[in-house]
Length: 140
Ligand SMILES: [Zn+2]
Image (cartoon, rainbow, N blue to C red; front, top):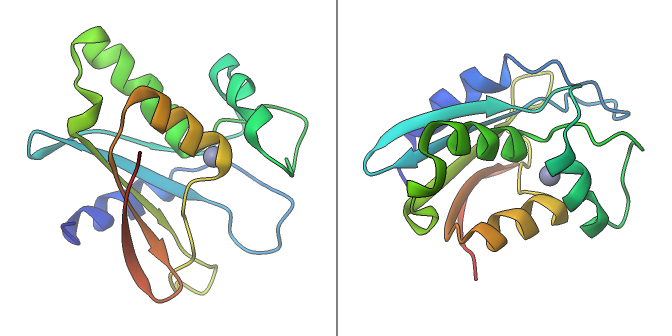
């Protein structure tokens, strides 16, 4: 984990148009680090997608019936557009960032849908904000 990448994920979160039902800021930013550099950044949004719809079945409690894109989904779409089938997902390290309205760090571990999607693709490493700092997780 390289903490400087969270700066870029934070910037991506600022672009988010997503408005959930939560009272705290639901904006989440994501960057993909591949072969030593950031190759894509994304955020969650009010836009919907078939990819999000497909993986939303993995979630116990969906806060909306619309398959609004999570940051991870949007990031995966961008990586597919950019690299097509040539990307080696096991070498992609995804960084996620979220903060509360007062600017302190908030948890941004992927939801069940996004974890299922990332594991299906073969992504092995994710890092995300927690209320206490940062965490890295190795996926199956
Ligand atoms: Zn998700």
